Length: 403
Image (tube, rainbow, N blue to C red; front, side, top):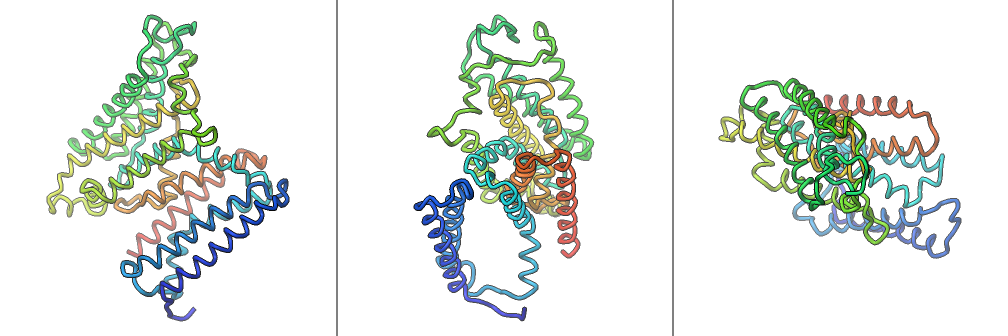
């Protein structure tokens, strides 16, 4: 491809036309109800994709002054775009392959299940992303999820349940155990922050130590009499509704909650001074200090905020499953880190977008759900996960080295 450009107005018009065609095809297939047992809800997918492409085309036309009158379509630019969006292309290819093997994957019910399963994982990943953006990590995330699950569930059992964690505890408002569970995680998040900011421990070591402490504390609490390490059940419907309620009988409340947190975290990272400080510390800590950023305070806030996010994830996880044990959340931190890395959050710090984190979480959920859906050996999930993680880190290092 030779060095060339195309006007943004023409590009937007082309996108709009493509979107209109996809929307029209989807609408026609839906109206005539063609081959429902073959294509299932493909018409709805075509309509959704078509409308999205139209919106993208309109965005380019409306924002010509902001984005520039022309788009560079040189070979180098195209290569860069493909490299930066390789993981999105991988997700699209994966969905297409699974849908070809098993057309039932095109049902809207499947999409709803994937989004629902991704919700708590996304909230946890958004929390751990803060620690990655400063060039660190947080290995205590999964155990904090377990702690929040146990603390919240232990106080929200039905009064008539035989094996209550607190036999004499009266019925209390849902908000109390939820707040206590989140506060417990924030305390351990503060401990992470103190070890990293005040004692200059590497985040890997600091959070590994806190991970062990959290698990020990959670297990001691879980082993208190009369429970004696029995799985917590008999959860009150007033609590489980937080993870199981369906809006309009079709949209899981978890998806709405995850969407709200995604918007809030995007705003924090992109529109606040604190968010800019996070990127600055990850990009060059010494430069951040020289520029007047209070690095220790920012690090403390980051780990406390991350702890709060893990607490929310743990509460929702126990509400979703209507139960809890001290082993809830095991390995969640590794899945969250992997999702962030796959989504473009650099291990070197200072680089990463909320959009990428969402895509990273969806990719791993699609792998888990999709491969099980087509009956593939579950062990292949681990193989494919490993390949995707290695490829993502390799791409990340390639971009970093070029810079």
